Image 1 (cartoon, rainbow, N blue to C red):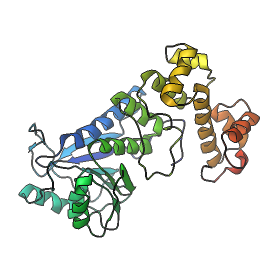
Image 2 (cartoon, helix red, strand yellow; image 1 turned 120 degrees about the vertical axis):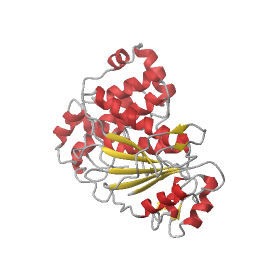
Image 3 (cartoon, rainbow, N blue to C red; image 1 turned 45 degrees about the vertical axis):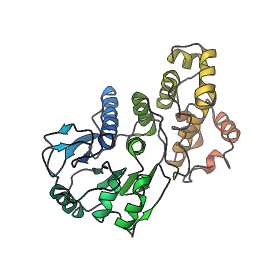
Image 4 (spheres, one colour; image 1 turned 180 degrees about the vertical axis):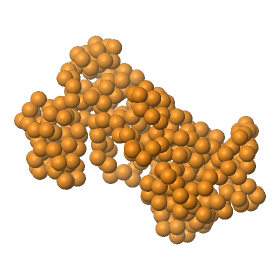
Length: 341
């Protein structure tokens, strides 16, 4: 996915996200991701934009008991997804215990419904959180796909879906249209990743900051996006400045202006960045500008246009930053290429 300095706004409408709940569904498996999606919508509203996610809590019964004993009522029925008019995400979650229990009448009804799904990338997609992957396996949805689950359920997953490639020791695994995560907290990691893929990494970082969690990508990802790099911390001042720079890298940033944005002094901001982000404020700004310039070049812009869009004062400044950060070749050679390593 090409990184963008501006917020992505998909034109195909909001994603319908269906959290499928049975008795004893682990409440954090679905409540954490649901909150992340709600906060993403909240961030969009703050920008005057429509919501990107429509949340639905569905199941074979109108009421279900959660893993902690609290009841969830007024569940929507399992939806008909044969001819969806917009993207659909089906979210399956785990249960307490050593094995997933699917011998009840509601569970059998849910499996019957799952077996009728026609998964397709960008249309009907599956998100498995924790042992939710085991449920998907029993429905035959993981055959031919890579997937992971909680380490206590790895053997169970292999038995339920011998044709799946079960990966251990992963935060989450992406094999569209199937996405799976290893446990309660990694379900939140997966959700943040999917928010970034749909709306851009800057907004995903804002959601992570609001939830006071460290935004990370899974170990299967080949490289870390510059928009996500140096965000593995929880300091609100540094996040505030990083958000502002990421959303408008072309503006005339200086350390004093960044410090003003963070409501601190330039010297203190430098100390905070080094301590929490592991990089200086100006080095972080330059990395973001390089990412914007690379995206502009890959989209067909020339070097002068890319430099202007990214906030570099000239072609020469872009070229100097390009070589200083160890990128191969020259900016003019980047059009149509993958990002240099």
